[in-house]
Image (cartoon, rainbow, N blue to C red):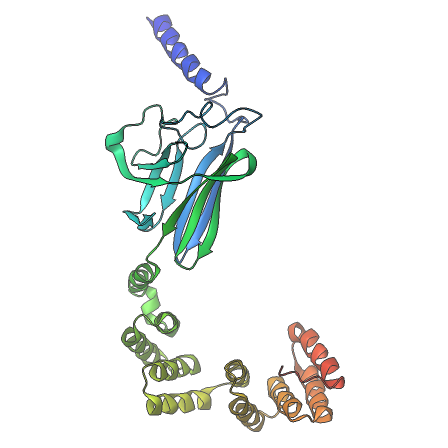
Length: 353
């Protein structure tokens, strides 16, 4: 009885081994088609393709090794698996978050992509159509030769990427898109219910996101107020001023900006000046640098700010002197940049450009 069972078991192993090109199914040994994983983050959503890479190895791939009109595993060995950590769309068709087995039906002019709820099968040998989560059709393209089957993420954008299968001289792309703002907003609401709710930084970061995307200024203002209530800081006060300005409430924005600047340390004042310069508000930036020098006369960023003021006025001798003074008080990480500024000023090169 035991011998009969053993023979049946060995027979099963041998039949599977023939499918594996005599590779081990028991031990962790090298495979002819090696394992690869590629991941792309879109927004905060991770899209992963987990697959094995067969080699063309001078064979005729399309229409022969991979027949047209038949379901194919989109790789080698175990199912090629596509994971999305949030809901996505594939070629504008919705697909819920999860792990899917990727199967393909190649054609000479059109391919069918199949996202199966079965992701752990061995290839497509046990594929069942009633387990499909999604089918879409795409167009194959001529491409440079790839000996090893490859999946790449191309045309990466803030809310989408194109997954492209490349093998032999064919490329098969499909677009994966994400509703980034909806997903991030839901994620923020979940995160802020944890320990983050007791610290000003979490509310401030949430407000900053809503401001930067202009998706929900009312939510941004509410979150920034909560940040200020938790702990009033330069960061959340200046953040509130920016939100109010974006809402068109100029006078209120000015009130909170002034309050923030009163609370700012010398580094914060300097970087606020740099932000103004980035917005092409040169004179406003120079006013901030002068205020910084008056309020914090002995801090090195105050001297850098005044070097910028004198440089903008064309008084390079005073600018050099201020930058050299800044050098004596700066930390080691900034000294190299300041030394370069000194050289530029000595050459009468305006460092504001």
